[in-house]
Amino acid sequence: MLHTELRLFDKLPLTCSRKGTCCHGKQVFLNPWELACLANEKQISVREFRDLFCDFGGILLRFDGKEDKQGYPACSQYIDGFGCSVHKGRSLACRLFPLGRQIQNKQSKYIFEGSTFPCFNGCPEVLNLPQSTVGDYLIGQETSIFEQAQDAYLEVMQNLADLSFELLLDTGLAGTGETKTLTIWRKLGKSSPIELANQIGTEWLDVLIIPNLDCSNDNVIDFITKHNDILQQLAQDQFASLDNFTSIHEASVQLMRMALYLAKALGANPESFSEYWVEIAKSNGACE
Ligand code: SF4
Image (cartoon, rainbow, N blue to C red; front, top):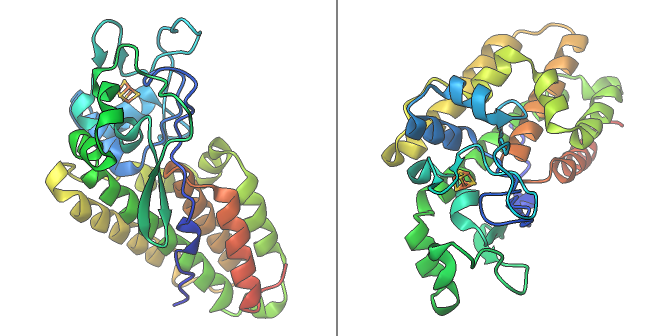
């Protein structure tokens, strides 16, 4: 199996837009475990939560609530005069705000890019931030398990990409000199998340975003390991016995599409990943 390493996990941005206060005008991307946590907190099914409160097929929390004074809409989970209705299950991006997280050389780094915090008015959780350490802030926000989930899903993404590589490189497809597969991989990196979701299709999207697994804080790695196994098994069932290059090409593209869509869910840059993976494939004999 070709492993393409996790080098592009350098500079993994979180996705808060910092356009308004914490729960207005942000982009909060969700990994599948975070989506399940939010649904659990809301006491509805994951499918219902996705359909009612998410965009892009379930990876972006919808912001369609009342606008704040700057005109930024509130998160769908924000209740005016109360705050977050899913506070215990809120995602990593919500917990980190106003900080961001980068991974460099497999080490987490926490960043703040502004000069003043945008949310001092009305948010008691950040009032003491200048006096406390980042570590204390993260403990207070209980980010640890959510960071574990984020990192574990990066591995799931890499595993999907590895399967895509195997179909291209280990089946003889690349050896035919065909160029279509890498051309499409590159193009997928520039596609919007909704385009990727539509192309992935309902069957695979449901397995990728709403696996039927129990979510609780003490079994996050178990959840993601099982999710990875389900995806690998489905790929095995559908793609292991393909007997023509057209089908192998389509399967490779589908798995790459899913890897890049998951990259977006994790707040990473799909275009950087696709360009990197195209170059890796070319260095292993594939043509573009
Ligand atoms: S989930 Fe909660 S904390 Fe996160 S943006 Fe929405 S209302 Fe705010």
